[in-house]
Image (cartoon, rainbow, N blue to C red; front, side):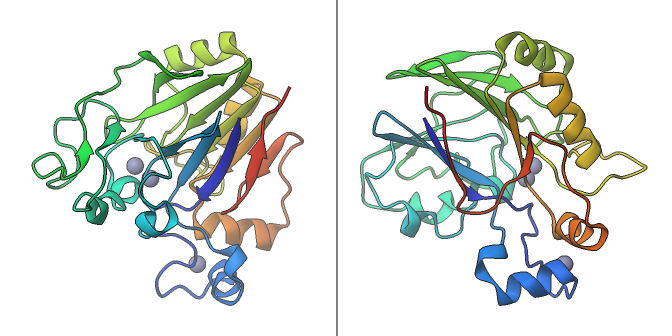
Length: 253
Ligand SMILES: [Zn+2]
Ligand SMILES: [Zn+2]
Ligand SMILES: [Zn+2]
């Protein structure tokens, strides 16, 4: 099982438009420090599943036929905007799974084009795609939002964004499930007043300790968090890694 981080930024991305903080200036100069909309590609047994579709160049990055399906965490624009142009494409129908959010995003459901939204995930639904097992996990966010627990040949990866902490049932599931790898929302530096929609660094680290995977990757990162790491020189605890665009991880026996 291979996971490619195709985007690790929050909705603003890095560099954020018009910003001159150290993180944004550096990202302007060094393309490898940029962060695009939070998304990933999961490759198992020669099949690619896209997790979220916020990449504005989704169609160029993943030509028709190069992936089998899209799993959406939720219908906020930064997670679905790449679908808007490709829906008018001339290609085989693309199954797009996600939570049963009646509103969806803008007119995607009204005019789906080649996208097929007919199947949805409810909390703790489990589906099998060939040898890949996927379980949907409810998250805490301003819109109906699902994380996904992936299992393939005994290897387990949980992808958990966007969320502020975890609902109790999701935490209990993960504590029993014993993930090898967790990918989790970490949108900001530690905050005194906690957001109801996103983790800050201390909330993400708390999830790492409570779920206790072998390794946790932080994603959905803001330029403020990059700037804070740069200015404070803070290091993550052992087993916690800040992901970056293009990072590939392999889960092998
Ligand atoms: Zn900035
Ligand atoms: Zn969101
Ligand atoms: Zn988001």
